[in-house]
Amino acid sequence: MIKRVFSRSLRPLLFASSLLGALGCGVLLLAFVLAGEIYDYQDSVDGVHLPPIDAVVCLAGGRGRIAGAGDIWYRYYEAGLKPTPVLYLSGMGPQSTWSVLTGQLRRGVRDVIQHENVVLETESFNTDANARWLLRYAKERGWRRILLITSPYHMKRAHYIFERLSEAGGIPIEIQTLSIFQEPFEPGEWHSNLHGIRVTVTEYLKWIHYRYFWVPDRSL
Image (cartoon, rainbow, N blue to C red; front, side):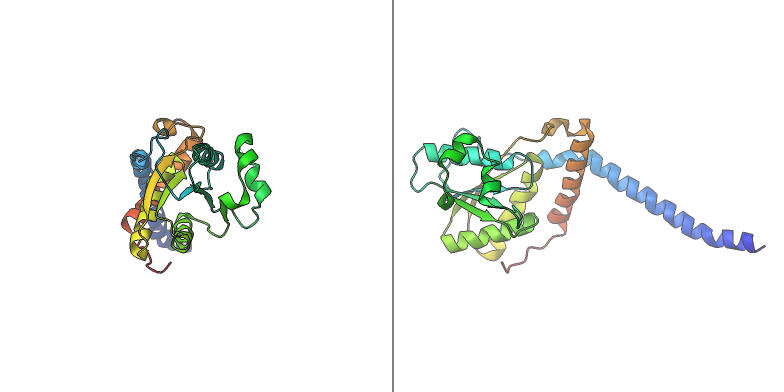
């Protein structure tokens, strides 16, 4: 008798648990189907014709981004533009040093780059904070044009956050973008391996949050 009563009392919990599990699976399945939307973004820079800028801004969280950003900076350096744009590295982490940075740059870049060419920002921990710290530097140094560099899966959300915070904070800045292709999968083939699926679906869920629920804070 007690067992039957106990069993009946558990049925609502089991049903709710099953329902939540089904809803969770449904959300993940829908995210998988729609996740490719994050690659629906067109960079403003083609990598051949580089626009005049104040800083090459690299969001350093993904593989290959720093080396790629260093290569872009080097092209500005070779062009002999004065002043040479600053190489701004965002989110390197509090333990980062000059030697850690230069260890990720290609040899030709290491040979010419100097401390005064670089801003090593080590405080930010996500894309929102990346943008806030960059805008503070831009305001202090009078930057008006930047070239934002990150991975293809991250660019759509990153550009959106930087642009919205620029508007909210009243710091007008022109944001050009150039994606660095360094991941072990092509944007059109992200669903062909587990790493691509994990990265893309996770980024898509973040994009949905920022696109529809996030309200940028005006205080930078």
